[in-house]
Image (cartoon, rainbow over all chains, first blue to last red; front, side, top):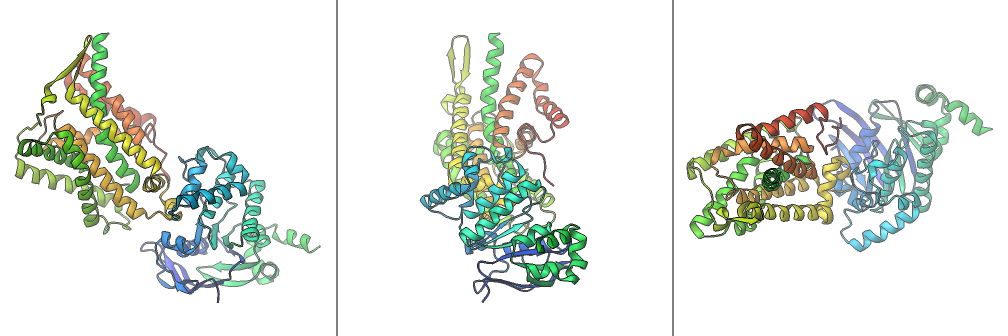
Length: 252
Length: 291
C-alpha cells in the first residue's frame, strides 16, 4: 500500500472554479517525486490540499491508511507530512535559532526540541554559524535552507517542497537541491516536490507526475518521462528549452 | 528649562498609560488582522469595573486591575467564540470585523449609558490626588502608580511573548500567518487567546484610567481615535512601535498643551499621523504590506 494516496481529488479556492478537477496519485515511502506541468496546472494547489491549507471538495487524501483530507494543517503536520511553500516562509523577525525552535512547535517536550535543534544545526553548519541572526537579514538561498531545516524539526515522513529553486541564483539552487537529496538519502524522508526547472527536478526525483488542467496526464520513472516524445513535445520543450540538449548530453 | 522638563515628565506618565491602552489593540491587529473599534469601549468598561469595585466594595483600583485581567480575558475569549468563528474564512473578513466591532462599541456604550448613566466618574483612592515632590518637580502619585503598573504589565506581556510556547505561536502568527500554520500553530486558537489578551489589557488599562482621567460611556471614541493614531504611527501590529509612539506623542501633546494651548493637544496625534503616513506609510516599526 502506498504511504500517501490521492484519490480523485477535486479542489479550488473560495467560490472559484475547480483548480484540481480529478487528481489521483500514489506516493511510496522513501521515494522522491517531482510534479511538473505548465503554469496553472494545479501543482501548488495539490500540495496545499495535502498540507491541509485547502480542503478538498471531493475525493480523499489517504496517509498511512487514514483519510486526512480536510484536517487542519497542524494535525496533518503531526501525522508526519510537512510543507515548505514557494515563498520560503520564514519568520522574518525571529532569529535563525528561534525559527528552528518554531519548527518544533508541535513537539511539546523542550528537551526533545533542544536535541533536534542540535542535530539540525550539526547537519547545517551554515545555520549554526548564523543562529543568532534575524531571518530577514539572510539571502534568499539561506532562507530557503532555513525553511527546509525548520521542517526537519518534526522529523517528517513526507516533505513537500514547492519550487525550491524559485528566484535563486543557479549556484544557490544547486545547493538547495543537494540538501533535498541529502534529506532523502541520509534521513530517508519521502520527497514530493513541485519544480519549474524541469531538468533539475527530473534529475533529482526518481518518479514524476505530469499535471495539466487540474488532472494528472502522465506519470512514470523520471528517465522515461524525460524521454517520452509526447511529453517532451507537449510540456518539457515549451517549459525548458534546454532540456533536450542536457539530457542528450547525459546519454552520451 | 525646568518647566519644560516638568511637562516632559507629565507627558511620559501619560504616555505610559496610553502605551498599555494601545498595546492590546495592536496585538489584536497583529494576530487577527482585526481593527477592534470596540477597544476604547472595553477600556471604559474596565474603568467602570474599578469604579464600582471601589465605590461598593472599597477595593483599591490597583487590586481591581489584577482581578480585571483574568475576568476580561475570559470575557474576551467568550466574545470571540460567540462572534468570530462564523466570520473566519469569509472573503470579506476585514470589512465584516470592522462592522462587527463598530457595532460592539455602540452596544457596550449603550449598555453602560443605560446602567451607569452619562455622569462623569473618577475613582478616588487617596493617592489619586497626592503628588510627590522632589526639587522643583512634582509628580502626581496616581499617574506615577498607573504608569508603573502599566510598565509592569507591558514587561509581563513582552516576557510572555518572548519566552512562552504560546508566545512563540503568537509571534509566529503575527510575522507570517501561513508559515505559522505550516509549523503546526493552530492560528484560530492563537487568535482566540490574543483576543482574550487584548481584552485583558483593555480591562487592566481601564482600571488604571479610572483614577487618572474622568470618564463616561461615550468617552471611548476620543480614546479610540488617539489609540488608532498611535498604532498606525508605531506600525500596525508592532507592540514596540505602539509603546514608543505612545510615549513620544504623549510628550509632544503635553508640550503642545503647555506651549500653545490645550485645544491643540489632540491635534498633535493626528498631525504626526498624517506626517508619518506621508513619509513612511507602514509606520515606524511596521512591515510593508505583503500582497
